[in-house]
Image (cartoon, rainbow, N blue to C red):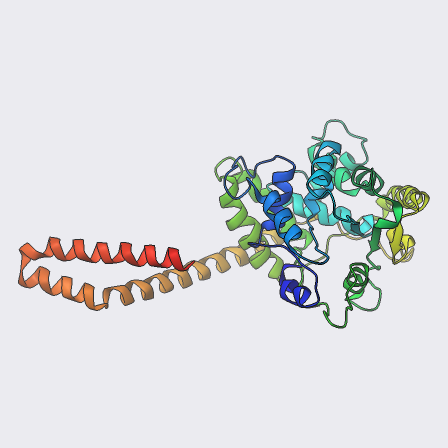
Amino acid sequence: MSGKRRELRDLGVLYPESNGQAHFLAAQDLRRLDYYGVSGPKIAGAWGSVVGMVRQWDGPSIISHEMFSLADADTVRRAMRDLEGLEVHIVMTARDLARQIPAHWQEDIKNRGLLTYSDYLHSLKRIDDRVNPFFANIFWDYQSLPHVLRTWTADIPPERVHIVTAPPRDAAGKDTLWTRFARTIGIDPEQCPADVTSRNPSMGLVETNLLRRLNAKIIDEMDGPSYHNMIKHYLAVDVLAARDGSEPLQLSAEDREWVTQQAKEIVQELREAEYDVVGDLEELIPTWDPAQPSPRQPDNASDAEMLEASLDALANVLFRMDEMRNELQTVQERENASPLRLAAKWAARKYPRLADKARDGLSAVGRARGRLAARRR
């Protein structure tokens, strides 16, 4: 959505954003949470900032982030109070559990998770109380769609509640979900087409299990922000998800029955609520090919496969470190070749007593440059 901000604005729709994390931070601020134990200027006031931009805009606006799904009734009341006087619509995009479950497990692993895939599934089914239920609880907080919508729509009529369904994985047209969403918010999708090349890359089953095992080695040694930058975004997305020939995460044949039953119950509740549906609620019920063999599971990834993935990752990290070293060296050489630094070196050799003054002058210029750059930002 952020990448379409200018196109949406040209069509009269505001996607309020002061930085790339504006809506995530707004959700955290509204829910009165911090991020990895850090609550500072980035979070404090983020919700109010987004609401302020919405109120200043003469037209429809979109506030969107999955973290809003976790809001409780008190949080929703605060949101509606802050949006009082505006016509609020609730739009939920949804896809089937057969895709959501593996995707959520992988996302949990990318957030320092340690549960094996089988333990995660047992936890979702509530059949093994020996498994830490933390991630299972979060999953159902997101995926209990009727509960999420009841929380957000207590004072909103059904005609202003919209469910946009994602078509099955093998459905024709990669832009169907965006086309449906665009029409829901009142814009012509042809004037703001989907970017089908933009995606959230997924790791394969070997790579995800490798990261899970790596988490056990570093979880107590690496702080949250460092993990977020180095592991979640660099190692997981840029390195492991980029490996060729990865096997996708899928549900096993033995999990199909209970997942289908859960999906049917969800669809029935949504249908009874009489919300506006863009697409088809039946798309939220997974379909299976009985002739398809049960896919291999992440817990069955061999040590040899994970060793190969580890070597690929290590090589990639080393190549990147070498690139960064060369980039840093280039910057240092450029700095050292500047007239001021050359003058300082000449002064140090010719007039040693002036060396300190030259260095002081260079430092002062550096500070002035920093202040000027800050003002320009």
